[in-house]
Length: 348
Image 1 (spheres, helix red, strand yellow):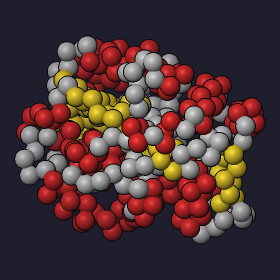
Image 2 (spheres, helix red, strand yellow; image 1 turned 90 degrees about the horizontal axis):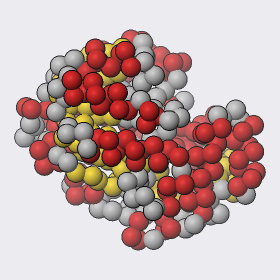
Image 3 (cartoon, helix red, strand yellow; image 1 turned 135 degrees about the vertical axis):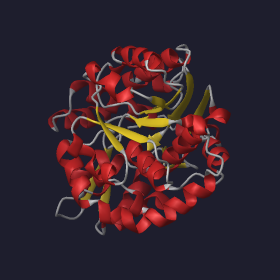
Image 4 (cartoon, helix red, strand yellow; image 1 turned 180 degrees about the horizontal axis):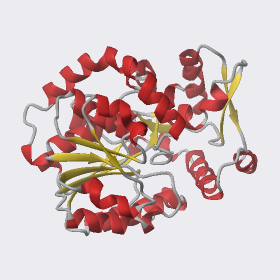
């Protein structure tokens, strides 16, 4: 699910900080060359950049890209320093920050001019966002790049049956009307979702393992977190052409979850079977897995959207990734092939 569970668990982040450094070393050179070449005209007004979720699937990629590009002013938010120690070693400031602790907002935003806002996995996030915007204005933040969900601000869209999407819509509208310069990145389903949300099942020491869904074998449009991160970096470092813009980020085409299972099987070196359930079974299994009620509700609602088959329509796909990055959107296979860019949460 886009925008959900981007924050890593304490255990996963500590493991990331201690074990992931060498993994990134192998791709640091190529990444630095790519990003530096793309940002020869970095706007000095970008100033100090604060990444609210510096340890998540998108936030970590953005912070890493900024640091390997040689950008000197990067601050990431984390509840505890050791959650982001790996980024600190790469040159990032670490700020004590938690969405559920508004008292941390002011210090984290001190001296910040640009913000990447990643949405945490929590119910009723829209009730906290107004205070965050208020503090942003008080601290003189000039530009906010916010992650959102596909068509969140289109109120009659099929995704509006999902409470998370409704929450994004409220927050996006508050941002648009805040007077702060903004860029909104509305993404379809992340390609990292199966590895993040069903990773425990997929990495069992048995074979075959199962990938579960209720999409009715309809095509689903997944977008690469690598593309989302690159778009975010470009809008942060070259902001003037992206001020007050809303972009919709998608993958190049829809694929079925059976195709996803086949690719994951090769990636994990084991057989992965896609199990398509009815909505009632999918919901019951999610509840038994211990997921909170709001998460289960949103998960089922998203599966119902996928099962409509509307993501298979050519009109669902946009060219915003290609327009902003200068290259086509990554395929699911290309996302899996770039293992060096993955976070610990995707690889655990």
